[in-house]
Length: 238
Image (cartoon, rainbow, N blue to C red; front, side):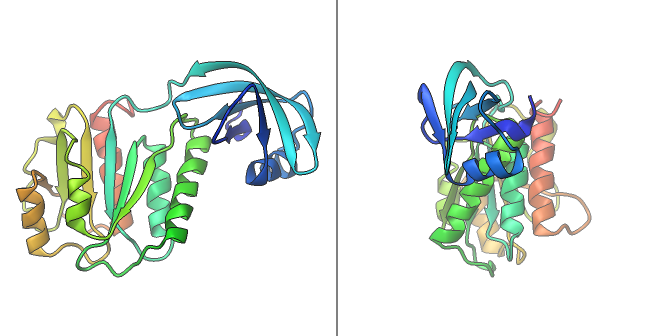
């Protein structure tokens, strides 16, 4: 089934209604009609095969036929913590982290962070995550959270087995990435990078410094590349 026939719905029942943006996409883009088959998911890890039973102005009524567990979601929990980025770059990072299998994306503010976050922007990031999950055939949607300080973001990662902090101050990687196993929390800064005391605080919180190579990467490149490398090493891209 085409990925474009998948729809995220907050609550799925035997008869589920598509409204709002989902309805607009179904009718205006996909031209769905009565009798067409769709797949619904609610972020729980399960997906539902359904048939469009009725098309009316502003809604499609879908009858659920069956449900199943989805095999597209990651087996190992992966959290990406990224400093808030300027413009729409944070949206790009959330989108790609979702495609790469992240279970959670944490956006934070730090000393040299020049971007800001509000409820409207946070809700936009959550929408981006839902849309990316729909596109890449996941049945879970990453939680997207915001913390107004780096210490709060680091504390939110306390339960992850591996804690990795990408920083320009790291002369070498303090963790053997090739030996990674178990859940991972990754931290990448904003365009301004980190202060030395922030790196020291992260190490005190149990994070290992990691270098991303000899070249200076853009913040969004570093976040996406770091996530992709760790996902690969955990066996999620193989």
